[in-house]
Image 1 (cartoon, rainbow, N blue to C red):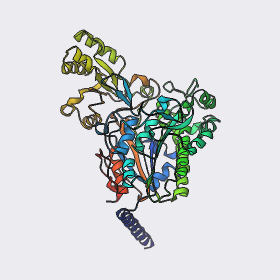
Image 2: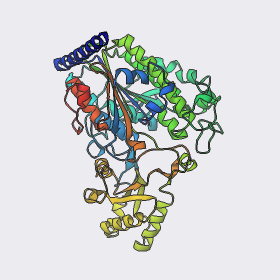
Image 3: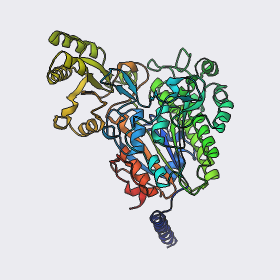
Length: 548
């Protein structure tokens, strides 16, 4: 009888909490602060593969207190960093928001275009234009951070923070309070004149603390006894690429401080890059007084070191496992800080990823799983075929983002038939055993390619910035530059299946195996904040989160 009463009371309390949530969401109340945490190259399965090594306050707290989604995918290709961050914050896809890759080929000049490069702005905090001359000028759609600023008549404060320029700039939108990223030439956080003409004093003060040197002073050892890393391969395998000047991918890495003195960017490929980022984010929160005003503020954080470590070592390495265990502890401290400074229940967090990552080619081969390198000799072979047929081997500008760019200016100059050339290239590619499909992107809608690949190719195709021919490689195939470590870009689950957890203000505990997409994150945040969706949004609010 007592047990029945207990169950009844729990049910009543749960209904009361749900009703309270609906009342809060219906009332137009808003959280004091939204924190976007995008963990670079975090595959969904890491939440559970490393679960036994996590403490109580980081990933486990998110799963215990938040609402987790187990079946969230990226709805476009190529699955790369710049597009991922942009699509999360715009609720849109490359075809619409314009960010077609980390970089792409300019058809008029044949030159590479980096997604946030802006030669019309000056670096601030460094003299290095390559690292500092950046802005969101190539972003066509508004972001949720833009819409929040507009909704509050620009009283809401928005700050973007990342080691990567693109992962700070694109989430922060067109008119944020600030966007800051790490400069490999100075070891400092910087910005550009697009945002401000001089670094705020608090940024100078933070930089003066020389936090990277302090974090790297003791090198990188495993945080647990190395024998406990049972989710990973041996410490020294042939397909891993070591950090800094280390000659082998083996713990401990004792010379990181010396490596950093020589090349500041070395901190990126250690777990301490994430620690540095969260410390800087806390400094931004303190100095901009985020979450302290009458309007909702937004702190957009990218944790990028998971990507750099993943690229160097691959998903099955002790280095990746240790990076996530350390990140879990960093997140625990960060959430505790938010509890104290903003107030538990006053802030809303979402955690997701910009993409996943493939298993290393060597790992697949060692475990009898098909893999390989899809593009070895591809451009050279295609050039030779074009030379035979058209007496010109330069009809291809390049291969980028698994797409072939035709040299359209040269084709016109030589009075050649572009459609015929495309057909010849596609026929050649479809004879290549490494290629699953090759297709004319302008005709993708009528091609004999199954879903979801077709829709993802359509969503990723930006007719002004993408290539002409899309290559879909066989499962496990990597580009040849990833002979060691790994990379990402394809439609397969290892690259497209990402975590998504909401926690905090207005969020009840739960989980869902429903079919959702990266583009649904932003509409959900907009619905919770009662603000207009970004201009290019195509996603839909996730009803489990907003309670209806």
